[in-house]
Image (cartoon, rainbow, N blue to C red):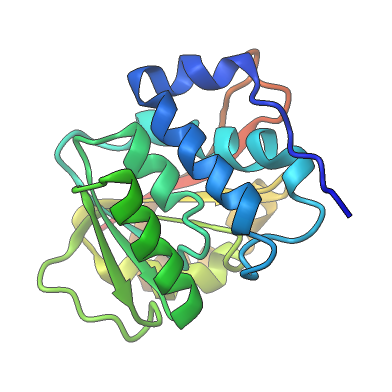
Length: 210
């Protein structure tokens, strides 16, 4: 059965700028191989751009120039590969425990010529990095209160969590008060990205690690 793949929305070129061809190459590879390799589900190709690629690239402006950013549970490279395409001025550490997903991330990093990406096979709670990260992101990994112990220890003092979340993001923040205190996390708030620009907005929880 032939699965239809979503047509690239016009906003994608605006968001990626002169990096749009790399985004197209990544989206094409994901549409072609993603389901077969267990990276995305069978319902995803018809909404690949809107729900995944554009959804992720909206986070790009929140990353600091020259920062070292971790993507915990990088999976198919959402958001890690997408953000690395959009922000060549930022260094990315893609952290993923599953071998088949590591293979995919390494293949795409090479195929797209992303010199700003390092792929690390490890569980977030076990990863050993030479230096702490400036920012950490994650998408569709776990509830915020469960993500905090996985992500906060990876970030330097004064660094930031930028975690992609769904419509219940604020409820997740409210439910994480105990973990926020335990890991010395301040200024946790929900930001909505893309309102007025895209049909499906992106929500992130941003917080500072002290």
